Picture (cartoon, rainbow, N blue to C red):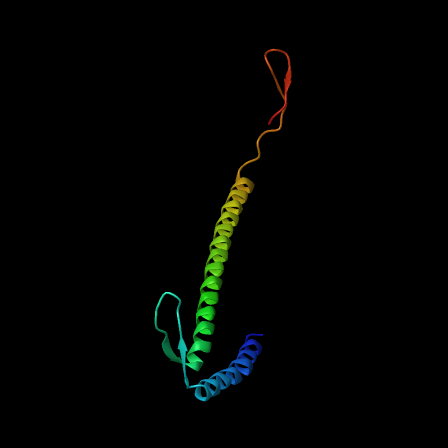
Length: 115
């Protein structure tokens, strides 16, 4: 399964990388980008104006994914510790001698059952 995933990754990533390089080489003419509070714009290559926001979005998505993955791993680790603790308690309860199950009489004359 892992080999198939790796193969599919390269099957998609390699043509996409070639396409991005061709795009960058074909669009080197400068664009002037203006930002509202600044009086003058600044010139950037056309490919940077397109690819830089994509790169920023990719990095932001990877950071969000990493944060979710770490939260899930922390939750799984806490649950694993809880399961381990409960298994130890179960083994201790199985190893302990059974409590007597006899019925005792109360001095007041009532019959008491064990808890």
